[in-house]
Image (tube, rainbow, N blue to C red; front, side, top):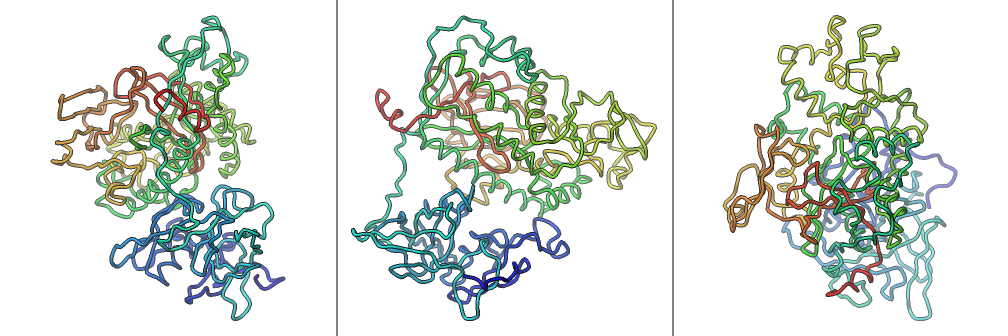
Length: 633
């Protein structure tokens, strides 16, 4: 244990040294010096050109300890508990892989010095889990070195952070208890090729990743009202859809899909891990002018993008990943990190649909989305009124109202503004709403690219204004760009989300994480391999499936959509078709909230390209056994 009765040491203070002389640092973030750590990039720890992690988190220490004592590293993980699933460590100098085995708490092979002790998600380590380096093992206790638990200095000469109780069962099993009563140890990973008593970390049965089609019986009358017209967002949804319905196409109204718990866990892991990967790639882009130039963004905005990233890296509320999920694997198509849609359908409508039709099979995949949004808004740092800015589109109406309900449940007052015609200039040229209240905080349904298009079209002569923040001309009615790019306006999602939402990020991700199991090979230029195997052409900026072409070697151009993004630069993505189930192409969307998985639903179409006209259908989660029990399973 640390020295008793001492206050936490200042952030970055060396608390002690683990075996091998590796320092352990205080992670008391409240005491971090803003002058020394002015932005998020300052917290990134790099040793010999290798990113160890975020200063001074538990995973950063585990990775650094392995590197400095053995020259080994493990791949990026979204959460500390994901280390339990790893199968190898990589030797930095040679690239050789060294086998890892995982032992669940209670295994007959004890942890040993140099093993990594892994905690479950929950309690003291909610969301992330925890990892520590084992330093000594005894029959009745284990000593570990770790970061981000106790920030007090260690006694002189000590080489461990904490001592955990342990016991040996009558059958030789070894059990480790945590000093926090609400936290549990998952197990330990050891560098060894001996599988005796180890967990079998095998690939899941591919059948568990197939979606199973279902349909409810036609017991309820068509046209019944099962949403509440007294609830604003539900009334707006019914107005946009023409009644209480999940699908626009009548033949799809009673359809839904099942996935098993293993598939849901994989979607959760992929969402969390990919969010972190997209942010790592965003950081790389914003450090490199040559990469940033690929995104076709006005150079006058580059300094603003970089300031947004430095100051508001943690201020992203929500985004949506689009996946192909089947027994062939799980692959991501893109990340809608800016102005993602479909939250209402996922978090409200699909659950209400199941209640109305008496669908009790499994559980709703979107039940936690609205509570997670409320929790994210509570920590968003907003002081004052949040203005929700939207267009006149019916979908944006119910989407804005759904988000408004979450924002107000978080205790934040908010107003909805439709368009910009009611805005005017107030004191000092600040943009104010129709009631004269200054606009300081904004959540928008507009994509940032809409603002960028306005700059391209209208602001060519305003470059100096944009650079010097002189866009407060009292004689000019406020434009969308004047509001969202105002120097004293904080916008959700932040400006930096332009980068992960732009498909130019996909080739960069592929270069950073080649052959990553969730990624598709994507390039800026068409390759011979893509020509041979098939590919998809996408504009780097696009929405709702516009201007996409699918090409394969057998039939040539398979599908193509029109749109207004045909003049944009393109990327070429490996062809990985959506699964076809009962005549429908089925895409899975998962929602990230504050960077973590928060729910999922499916979108279907008779075309292989999902567009804004494709139906959203319910997704239900069932035990794996029900998936394997399907005919042919």
